[in-house]
Image 1 (tube, rainbow, N blue to C red):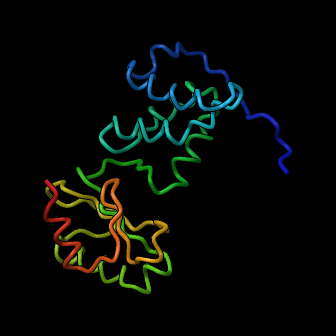
Image 2: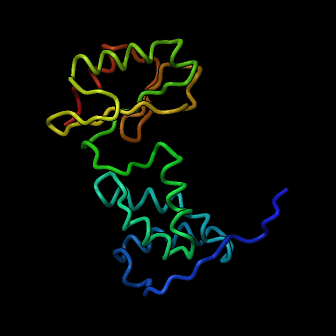
Length: 175
């Protein structure tokens, strides 16, 4: 049971029509419309994804502050979401993201081998971007594919039962 029956609202002194592009506002508003008006803050996760995609794959503090103003919520609440979930990036990323699951099923089925292979073959450590900017290697928490481990999220597409060779084919197919 929750002791809070309404979200903590903070009204920011900004003109919301000047925040973001009309297309971004429209996309965020489509998610806001899914919730009762007093719970518009519930759209924070899809809104962060929209902003991240529009900003080349990462979020700036300014974007998060603007989102807080747009959703009438404390900036720190937006920061908490953006830093808790691994799908949000607060630094520039490569053109693609290679996210290797590190949860127990994937570890037992070879995810560490995948990471070591990518580090060695492509000269990039976890959290780094290749010198040519082609991809960023990330180690992430459970991707929910335990049955077919090890799993890798390549951009927004899941790949399962990977070997170093099959992961190479995926990476080599990136532009």
